[in-house]
Picture 1 (cartoon, rainbow over the protein chains, first blue to last red):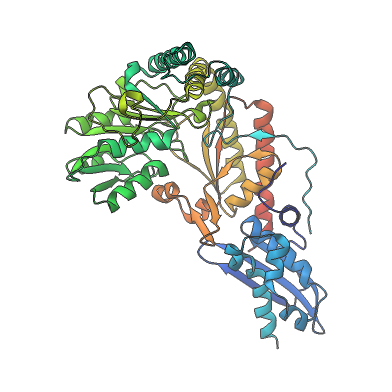
Picture 2: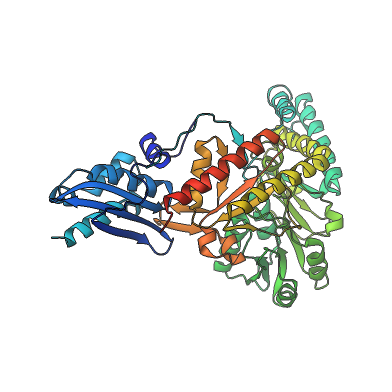
Length: 120
Length: 391
């Protein structure tokens, strides 16, 4: 069946990894697009400068859900320094998302980076 | 953490307001005309005359179906061209008077109206109520302005609401104003008689009623002052030059005839299915059905769910083999969500407008498909809501 999106994007949209709330998180952060009412809320468990676990809640379009899921996988078990050096362009390119909606698909990673920066 | 698994996928097309599959019988007729009776209807030899006979017969059949005279039909490439001819072809060149339309028209009229405004024509927009029906009091007031043409769609493509065209035509004619109706979404779904409606111009497109794409028509009441916008060999009584698309036109006439044969039965089936779908939606909660509850196209539903993104719901259904459309999609050039101009005009609250899909049932749907759709819709809404549960 033909689809508008890449197989990897569809996989993350249909089977989002790490979806749901977390009870024993150490850091919670929300990134939102107030105009659309779309948002992603990440729950991070940071131990010894490393993100040991992550989960998220989300409302948004398929690209946004997939980008949030992909981001959650990408940062897990990485140090804060490593996460801060991650480039959202990689996410955009891997998921094969149009450059025009970069602001939307980069929001999950940028939200996490901003929060982690605040812990330093 | 949860995973989404889909094991059995059924292909279900429920986007018949976007386009329809061509009836097999129509496809056979079109093929025959493309491969055997392929002559140019303007040619004097036997091949040309074969095509001309087929064209004349189609014109007569279409005119009988619409309640007009054969020579009152101008065949063209589709609804957009018909709308453009109606508007550009009838407005006065000195721009002293202009257009009265609504803000919920299809882009074929709305964008043309915007262009006319830029060109210096006065253009007025009649307001609609929460169901999408024109406010007749406001409409009547606007008629007293510098208006020479009213253009209002018969049925809305997104929410299915039907306008009181006959009443508005009478009001406009009392002031000597011409009336055009874009009936693209209504033809083949509800009975249409142009004389009873009292319109001067009416647009249609074959692919919306199980005919081929790239063919449509404009009804032009005899005596209506209109000039061409396309020039050339003078086809269609000089109003639309260009070799006639005979296979398409014959296919369109055949498709309309089949639609009329099945209209009563299909209307009953669509009513039964839409009732079933709406009941399931109500049970999901935080739901709105848009459009007029009664004055509407059978089988067209605009469904809005709070805490659901319409594009995600559409994609979820698409992944499950179901084709519907959404009124809220990210525009790549703007990188932001665009809510349809129709839902904005209806005043639907943004949290609901963001979660809107359009379901348009058609001749090829059946009980099993409707049941499958309901089950996938219920699961999709619940899953998407569960993703932001507790936020």
